[in-house]
Image (tube, rainbow, N blue to C red):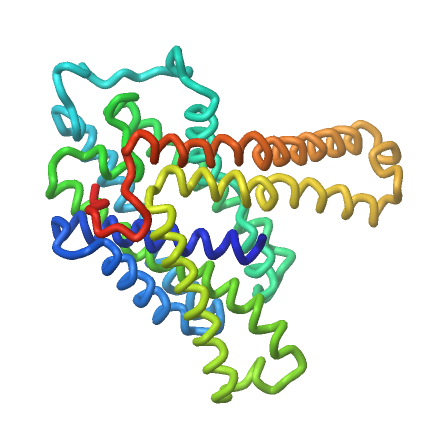
Length: 344
């Protein structure tokens, strides 16, 4: 599940990379080629074997992401109408609650798309392991969580207000009508498109590499075997990611599948079980009784998290897979390994 989760995310970045190429070049070549180019570029940037090299790129990536999101909010705000506007469909309709007639599948898919952004990532333990002071990690993860909740909530709500139910697209850059504005704001996201895919590939490669070469000189030294194996593992991961991007070539449904299959476990079940096991180890089998009200609240909250994860994993997976089936039946998506334009 760990490797599949990360590889699916890499596939998502191959897909969005192809969307960016098609958008800025006006579909100058086959989409499969653009997806492959994205995978090759990401493979090259994945080759550094430590997070210290990636941390510098992360800062650069975060800055450009902030600019990209800011521009998207500004552009949708200053335009007269969002992309795809027609008088027949009317002005953007904004609702605080789902519109009447919203099906379980469409409602669940929308929620899974949103939850993917905020769910805690399974890469966290890997980051903690390389910190000089691992116990200080709570400071950085708290700062990051507060920042992302503020930025993403504002970005999502502001773009929605100006695009409404009828014209909202994923990624949101597709809701910008002016082609220049769309290409500029989307282009500032390129460093993040590459970096995040690289990050997940690096975490997966380390997971495999350390188990293959544990206790050997290849693990921590510059050897031909070590570097060849590292490059080979990354190549296999990016080939699989490319295949995933071509088999499920639509952004929203791929996000929902990833969220239901993997984030249900790594975002809810994993952490709920971890809390229960850690408290049991520290305070004994009846920790929730021994710690009074605090113990009961922590126990019930984390049991609740586990059940939320199980709901995502069961009905959530059904909804995300059914959405793919419905998309194919309606003919609103392209076929697997298609050259068709997927630009915004």
